[in-house]
Image (cartoon, rainbow, N blue to C red; front, side, top):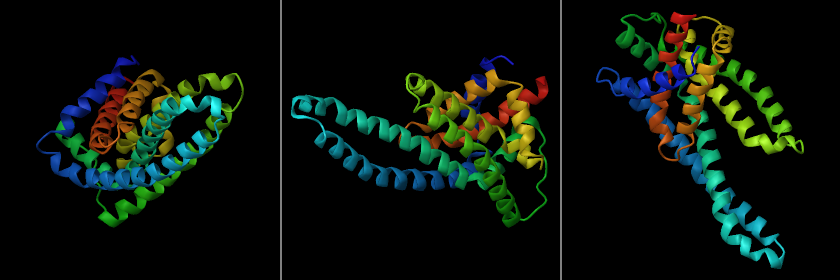
Length: 239
């Protein structure tokens, strides 16, 4: 699959997330995301202040001039990483409502979608089970990536490794909603994306960049869900 398909799906998500028939599906996930991201970054800033002060205090006198460079760098890296992490947490919490948005988008964009046929509480329960399954998939790989980036020499490539991991994780997250809505196993999403790694990684890279934008990432989550749904359909049609 052409890697451009991932970019095309993400940009298509911008258009569909603003569709008049879909806007009312997005306000609750956006509100949840705003609360989670704002609260997370508020508490993270407190830790950043402490971390910055400890690091600067530990510098020898002859390196005091690094204060001017290190302080803004610490804040920049911390805010970007925090925005991404809390953005992902917001996605996990809002997942049941994002699944409903994905269903509505399928009806609007493709003319049909699977019917849920269950109560909202049942949908929320099954969604939480699904998100737990995803976490069990993400966490061991997160640990491996973390350990690899501690290895001397290899850790020079740490930014690239983290980018690839983040891109893959978010491609899996956002392309899984159509699979979940059809009550198909999570493994089916993995097989689909592994067969189209180029498209999956370019889409995931776009989603990673979106979630790393502080105070705007909560607005871009519906875009990523719409894009993931479009990507799923394109990969199914070409698979």
